Amino acid sequence: MTTLPAYIDPQLLERPFTVTGPAAFNALALDLFHLHAARNPVYRAFLNGLRVDPASVTDVAQIPFLPISAFKNHRVLMEGLDPASHFTSSGTTNANTSVHHVPWPVLYERSFMASFTAAYGDPAEWRIIALLPAYLEREGSSLVYMAQRLIESTHDPLSGTYLYKYDEVAALLKRSQAEGKKTLLLGVTFALLDLAERFPQPIPDTVIMETGGMKGRRPEIVREELHRILKNAFGVPAIHSEYGMTELLSQAWSAGEGRYTCPPWMKILIRDPNDPLSLLPEGRTGGINVIDLANIASCPFIATQDLGRAHADGTFEVLGRFDNSDLRGCNLLVE
Image 1 (cartoon, rainbow, N blue to C red):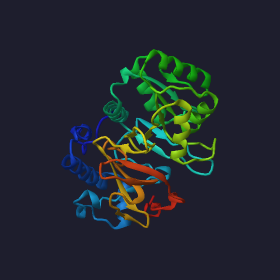
Image 2 (cartoon, rainbow, N blue to C red; image 1 turned 60 degrees about the vertical axis):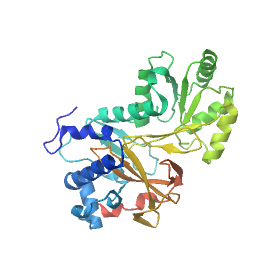
Image 3 (tube, rainbow, N blue to C red; image 1 turned 120 degrees about the vertical axis):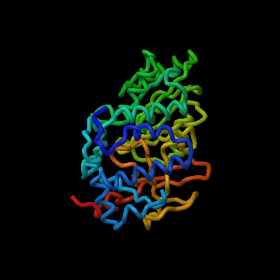
Image 4 (cartoon, rainbow, N blue to C red; image 1 turned 135 degrees about the horizontal axis):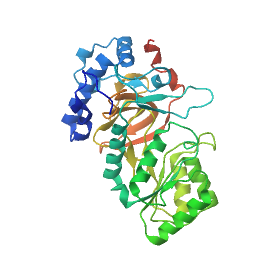
């Protein structure tokens, strides 16, 4: 853990993981808002561009969300912090990549370990097979970082990352099914489809988790079609999913049907596509805003490029992406 600036109370790094209900969540969200308004140059410039007086923000619903594309062109980090490490997005040939500076990687590890354990139990109970080509072929992937730490926590010599070794993965899945070993296959979408086409087999007790992403390898398909293909190929009752991104330090998990559940320190709000500063009620489709209280150093309030819908039971769906979303809101930032 790097030395903390005087303005950061060391207890602040513990508070996300002590959130147990709406009151504690809202209190920490407002504390972090006012801290970032004062100490985060990029977020402060964003608020100034919106002409928002931080003192006027007294409710979580009033907090402005920083466009996620700010991470492509700005150093989004509170002042006085030393970014011990960073994560980068995969990007495309015609776009800059996002860089997320992370002074305290331990917060990321604590976040995904706690949320995974809450959703799936102790990683030591599992065999985890990660099929993550494209991500493994570059440096700085937060998804690979998470997968590798979870794999290490299984203490299973057969857990691991397998890149393009589809035949080995298929053989290992067959073995795990025969042994009755709890097994999680975590894969990027195009690789899972490749495996389904080349090595279909009944492995009904395996949890198959897709992380999204074709990475230009295949045409995009809708989630329902993807899940239908994978369920038919592997004889599983549901396809699980993980929702996370380079610019966050928390994940939401789905046990099927594309319905994600957040850990207690993460919350999804839906913004009006035509008025980004207004929020929509449950059941309406709009832009996904994320409050990630573990994202203390960079920005806990992120307006993503995803379209989604929140539900009354606290779950949410991801329905697509905005077009030209990089252009939304970043003109409010100043260098």
